[in-house]
Image 1 (cartoon, helix red, strand yellow):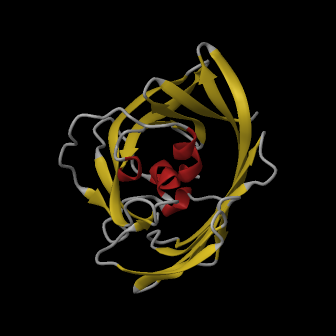
Image 2: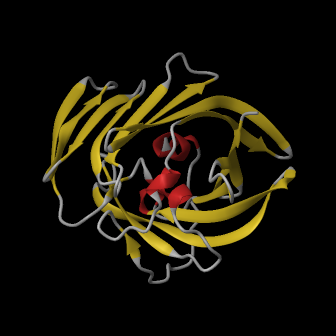
Image 3: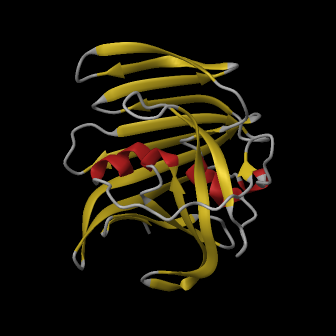
Length: 243
């Protein structure tokens, strides 16, 4: 899902230096696994142009508890594309230690298996080239595809500032263990819907070299993601929960 958001816009602004904060990993994790529920929800994806919002697609997310694991499947249907993007993640539900990640779209297919090393393959459909993946990793980390969901289940408060250790594979950029950063958390309301109390969580990550600012509006009672924004050099994408 994050790959789709970050490839739509060019990125050229920078943030100020990041403060030193403690890092969340599967071995150092205070999330509440009881908040992980079976659910299926849809968000409408908009591009903000001047004062108008132009719909560009739909994002469907399904979360399932399966025995001791959690499965998260995200499907993106673009209005101007004939095929959809599908990302699947499996993690151990007790600590969200990654087990499996697959990602399929019209440009490439990718499968990652998380054991002592990260193995799998990357198939570039543009060049018809398949590469085997074998990455040696040291330390504890989450799959990069799960951290936008992980923040829903953390003990959020106004003083909550953390880094999140994640593994990300990208043959054209930095591959390996990197970080996402929870920069600011505050109580507030959803734009255009002030009746709903939410946690407003602002984040960056090393995937975008900390140049994209992602803002999540999370219902303070249900922990459902109501709205997500991605800001890049004055341009904005918005994902809103479909009624």
